[in-house]
Image (tube, rainbow, N blue to C red; front, top):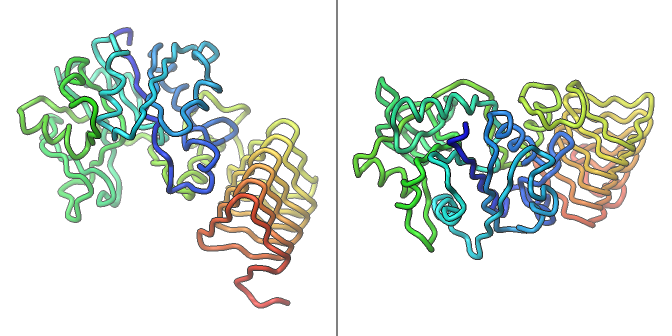
Length: 356
């Protein structure tokens, strides 16, 4: 893989994950005990790629503050910041001056996958393609970029979020470009690879190849996907070399206190200094550092932000609780609710069932 460099696009604002992304970019959210981006960078390193460029924008400084020059990861990291949003294609073009390898493997920074990256690169080289797209098969391709291919794997069309998809193969957010192809992307303006670059390449007769596999894949753009992706990492369903502990039913980080009769399972992560009270139940959830779940409370498939408190007997399901928020005793939160940071709900303040 010495002829391959990586580019990771991490400039998005992550609006679908608010309020979690008010204080951190989406790729830096704690996921199975470490920033989500650490899992992707570990896969890049394991594939044998040693140099990566991060295309940043929103809260750009947080990436370099955490990862530095990449030495601790076994990588050489370079950072390029967009001063204005440039889209996926514009973001790739914006880092072009930092690239020198013959081939460039590009990643969307919000995808959790178990793809064999060496195999993707091998497909790219052996086919002689200008660009190779990693494709996965999904049950409902309408929400994604649909990519039909011929029997040899050559891409025929790129259909972004069509209502009548001709195939179940979708764009998985990982591409390999020949370096010189990147220079054909217009510079200094927003460009979408999905809506402009790929269709234009196909129209010009360029060779765009598909690499299809059935490895683990999840877009981490929504709270539900973030929670389930983190649980899959903790349980070992999704692969990562960046986990801070062994896989299992729960990841309990340093300094966390869990009562002996509390139940913590389903791939839950309990952050540093968090506290779980007697009889509490935590299932398939993420508790950030310093979060508190009091006695008898239930948290299922939810995110509890840093320093947030779920008081005694409260029930939190399919909900995001922002940093330092307080969920009063015996409240019931359901149905994808989002509680903003520093909000305090009084005891019994929200309920979906009659008080008893």
